[in-house]
Length: 345
Figure 1 (cartoon, rainbow, N blue to C red):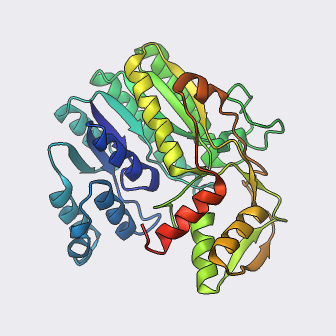
Figure 2: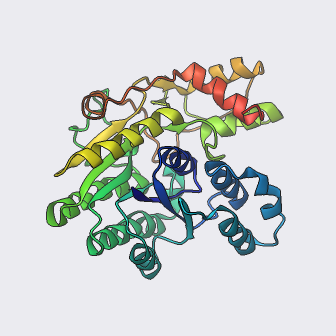
């Protein structure tokens, strides 16, 4: 199949591209290399995903973002993989991409991420996460693309009191603009499924971690700061819980979703992809300390607005429909992340 994957320069997107290409699919990758974090990291992600890291230093030596991206495009584009430097808000450019390619499926991983940043710029989050998604749906409708996977988030559950979280739970009480865009996306996806027969899986990802994780996320940030002897920001009393899910398990779930959509019609499903094992902030820090053999310097701070107290996935539906079975326990995942961070990939 020829699959559009958005957010290909990101953490999850680059791993997904690597897997799709290994399975013989061709990929049209879309990314705008947003300044949310360094384009150098994203360029490295893309090169790793297509096994062309030998060009990294040459590309990074270019002067300015645009020249680096142009050099990247020249190195990575092939019969199996086309990288498009494009913003999802740009409907005209997206239309051109769909017009020039016979697309079989869209996997939308792109969007502005993060709960706390969404509090500072909610309007832009709505424009990108909703407006960009709508543009992809409109292109899919226009060009007859009938299979779509959308990245939702565990944040839609808010401070849901019943655990583990099930897809049938009421999720009308988001506590951040980011979460509200993800819930709205689920509703919008159903509209296009119902009106235009676009088969859709909405994956609610639960706190993904592992190699290539964004540097602003807690595990990456904590490992970095502990090794440097810097204090780590520690919000609340340490008794917030997250269902940390290793990247390989998430990618396995998405790939199983691709196969499910290939094999089935008349599909609209919301599915949790998590580990189904909630880990406290205290436990997370202690696990990192043990693997680094170094104590963290704790900077205790109040809980942040928009942060949920706990995420915890019921994954029965993913197991039943997709055969999803996460295999990486948190302790092993942290060990693998640290090995990657220290350069021992």
